[in-house]
Figure 1: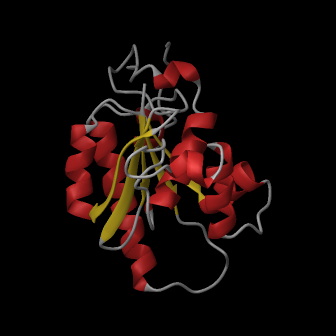
Figure 2: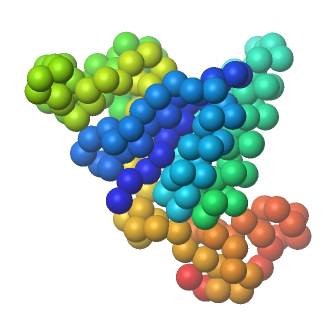
Length: 190
């Protein structure tokens, strides 16, 4: 099984498809292209990095990114994918065991997990499992690793539907009707 992870941006976002052992696909593409990519990966669990508040004022770019996170979320759910979000803080704690970790520390933790830089990346002739990952794709890969490590195996198997309303369940096994309708939703049996 595989999952799709997205590091969202204002105009373009990085994505990584991951199967638990290697990167199956990756790129930095326009947000509209990412919407199409979500349709291509219909039914595959999706993890999206979520912005977090640090109590400081933010610019319009952050709010525009939030709009795109919502659009990615909605598209994933409509295409039958379980979907979840994770903050950078959670990723740092998971991979580096420190909230003070920087992007370079996260990248190094990823490389170490795959046997070091040479084993993880390889070269053109002998490609490693992370060959070709660059720039913002490292952040998307960090999201993928968090998602892979924290997603229960039964969710990785594929999308499940609510037995009452037929909607696809979220990554945590809850029905989207619960949060969408604001009335507490309904009980459902998996």
